[in-house]
Length: 411
Image (cartoon, rainbow, N blue to C red; front, side):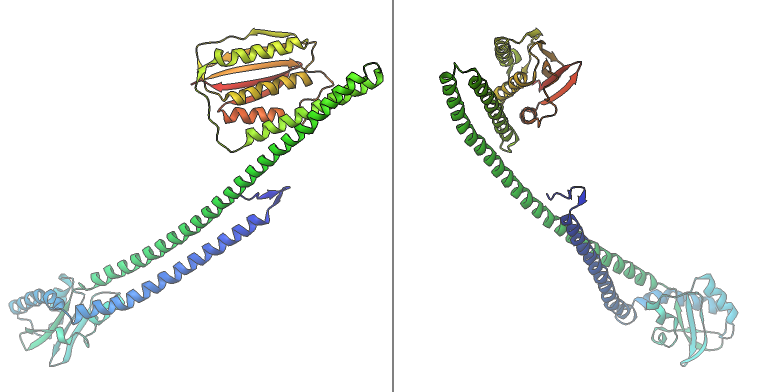
């Protein structure tokens, strides 16, 4: 992924990506709208023409729908002795039967025609024009003459309305499908870019980790040589107090540098993306008993007072990586040597919850030693290694003591 902010300012990469997305989305919706309108127009033009031809000329639909009304109207005219001039009477019959339009003609001459609707839809307009309905007229015997009558109840309009609904729905569906496919393609493209970026970043991280490990190993070799040379010089200069003082100072600083190199190596290993395997789960006493005993022995050998009364174990199991665990306790022991006040006891204790087992180590801190002000590579390495083992590390400083807590999930 790109780092989208740098020093509190928006990254230009993000702006460019957003512009590209907006441009693609705008183009997608523009094409979808234009395409939807084009499909709707083309389908409407062809479909209405075909439907009009089918209704008006290509089938007997009008005849079959009109014939029952003509027969009933003929019966009404005969029963009531209605002539072509009795407009009000057959107007009344037409209204009762919801006739939308009708016309009465004799020998092609219009005697009477009437529309009973306020609005008509455009495709059906020919059904309301006597000039187009002459071929659909059927004979009716009035009291005075025989005339040709056309009766239209608006039945064709439902087909036009249904077609227009289908046209709108189909066009919109095509537009929506197009937008969906385009957006999915855009997302897929960005997913591919993201995967490539993540792959490149993973490769860069691996190369960086490899570089850090190589540098740490390369630094350890000359430092070991310097330490050996300093030890030789100490033996040769035992009689010279001032020289011994300087050599001890050099030795102390070289040890500090080597410790930092070791911490850097631990941090590189812990931060690596390479998968690790946890050892088989075992009892906490079996795993931690020796480690804690060893830490106690080392500290007591270095004249530290150790309070281990809080250490106790239960029959629970945890899964750890023993190599990581060795590095963790070595790191914590080095921190105690560097920063702890050897006049105050180092407290070690264990604790249990339903889901976790924890080890806590607390030590007094000298006022002139600044653990929390350092870069903290050692603690960061411990935290990273604990996370790789599905555990956690936390620390706090209270009442003159610095506490580190290692928490492991019970399996």
